Image (cartoon, rainbow, N blue to C red; front, side):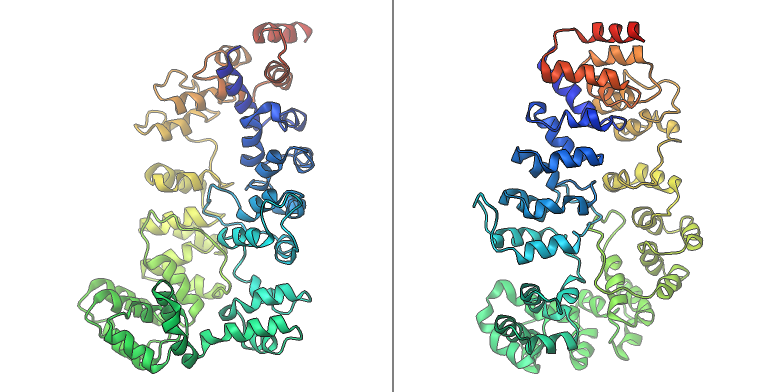
Length: 505
């Protein structure tokens, strides 16, 4: 057995969807090398395998599990207090694949990280390092600061105080009067962002790198607003929800069409909205037509997620801190404006009836957004988008509704990625084992319609060995026999082992 075949068999078995727990547990071992690590990180795992990885003495195994996107994050809670700080940091940092669906960590794991007094027994990272990983991972839901503002633990109230604009007025007042002096101090230091005079005083010391953020998010004094116009730095004003009405009126008549377009959908826009609907720029007119449908900042945010992006947008899909009402989304779904229908198609709570309607929408981007965002999007739509929009393929393949059959008509497609999808269809009469593309051959070797005899031949060919080892039709005893060869150095040749199994049967 060559080393190349060994690695291919191990990787194939590690991702074999039919491999039972006793097979996979054998791969939760350093002897399995990269295959075991890839398995712990890259696929759903039975409970017994998760348990074995959670208590495994080898840190690399636990680190790989900490990055697993497929396992229920609640099962990974013990890793938040793992003896190794690196394991904790891997869990806080999240998967390195950066999937579109951003799965938040459960509150109990977040609380563990934010209240930790140390960064692990190994001392390689600090608790602050781990929290830093957490902030950059997008695993903290936007609603978390508000949820923690009244928590019993002062460290969590302290965290909420630093997210000042995420809080309600009542929560801000409570934190300013918090019984803990550290929390009170943080609240006072954070409150400047909503004090126009304090913002004006602080701006000179902020530095150019942060000025844009401040101008786009904080409450601004008339003097600061006027200086923005003088310096022609009005772009952040157009997005800032604290921008005063007189400044908005000036922005709505700005000579730059991009600036006029930015303010055209704001819910606080005054009579200028009617002027913008007659704007000479087509994009500005389109955005201004949407404005009467946008009455809240939550609605504004949902429209902004769509209006600045095209059909190949792969931005993260996250749960907002506040969400418009279901009725608003339903109204958008039947709007004459394609952008509003795209907004509706992006909401996963839309009714089945409206999903059926939008799946047949004339606007391609409506159909694309529905396929990528809604759990009830019809399988045929998911397949259509996979074929026509390569940018969305990795995301579509993760969706439970993605069709596993009905793909045989694509076997002659010029795109090898599409042919590979068809090659794995179990209704395909003859999987294309001789396709010139490696990925197509691997997918064909993974087709469960192949006979055990054919799989034996494919296991000895480096071009198809990994796909054959991952084939769910591979008998479990055969999986164990291959692992015996790979992990224990068993002397019996694989083909002879197969003949022995056949004879025993």
